[in-house]
Length: 367
Figure 1 (cartoon, rainbow, N blue to C red):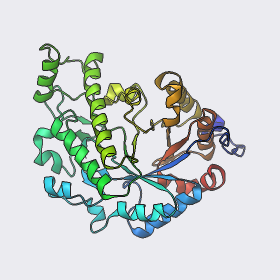
Figure 2: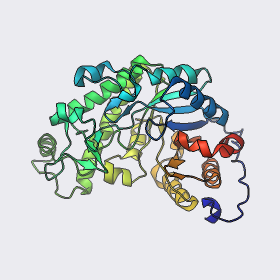
Figure 3: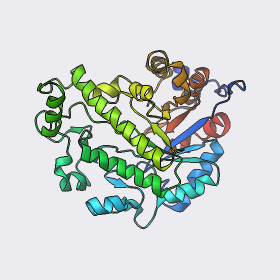
Figure 4: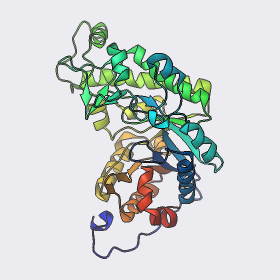
């Protein structure tokens, strides 16, 4: 554990990751999330060029670029203008970072995914509250009638047909407008806190489908959790169909929390997503700061949450940076090696800014 955490006084140099088995060819995924917060990567075309050049030098071949955050798109959205009279994120006024990234990254054969970071979260801390201000009936409601708020995020009701249609239309707009290689949701898409679902519309639907019974007061009641989670699984199926109808080769990637936390806290039953064939890539956020914790979660996934045939779709998310924390070279190398030993096709790092102080790992070891 000391070696894995990089805390020993005289760490041994990390060994390179295990090479892929040439007898088992796979399409390697070397991914990097690029956010708009805690990063200046998207703040100018020059910064984007630098980011892409650096990622290419590290062997990164997939970029997951923030497309939806803080109630704004990172690109000009006619849909957002029509519904809420807002343009793209004010930080990108007069620019189109998504277009710029695609133009630059594709020249280096790097795939670009639109990452819908906020998903069904409307805002954070009620800042930029235009969605729920203008569409108050879109709000998710907890048992006490308040707008469902979790970890500072205020949520839309992701079980409401109008809200689901909005999200599908937003993603369809991006897929239609840009030469995207894929789209990605995370622990907020498709998702909703298990505290939510107590609005009148959802309660009426539950009663209709459950012989007049009202939803349990216990928000963690397994049947109640499963009923809501199934609705989100069905939504994902609709989303996949909508995207594939526009662009059949556009990949559907999802990065939920680890299971069963994902289901119990955010109604994300992602093993069921795999069973239904709703995703092309699943990237659980195995954000652990020690090797033992990482391996334990990875083993759970491999032994009880996916089948052998689904392993080619598994691309774990690794925690690189959560300011001020940055994972050590030694830990990163050990986690990547764990993925290689498990025969997985790759990983995605959260997030790009962590490479600034880990260039030795990415340039000399990871590549």
